[in-house]
Image 1 (cartoon, rainbow, N blue to C red):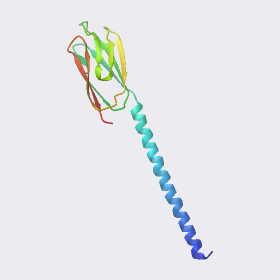
Image 2: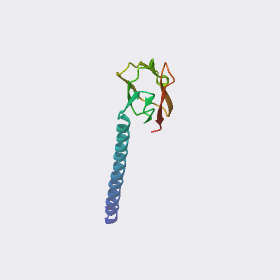
Image 3: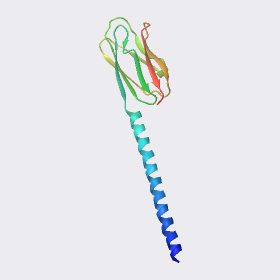
Length: 130
């Protein structure tokens, strides 16, 4: 092997190691970003909603894919009947002064309604793209 061939071999080997290192770092960075996004999506958004002269707050905002825990408490004695969230196939009894939890994970963006069956009282769930 001549000196020029040896030099070329060493240069190619060092270049290959450098390129491999750069690719390795890029792959690891993408993995970290994917894990961070997955972790952010998995964090449960919890919101307490009180029914007293309407829902308070009357609007809840979450991201697509984010688990949501809504804790409803009815403070008024006026009839409500069941709490309904038809877009999420949810219908639960909402007794006075008892917290009722509804857990959902919205899978598409949009604006959805939660309401009392017996009255026109309603609130909104806004699901934003992630």
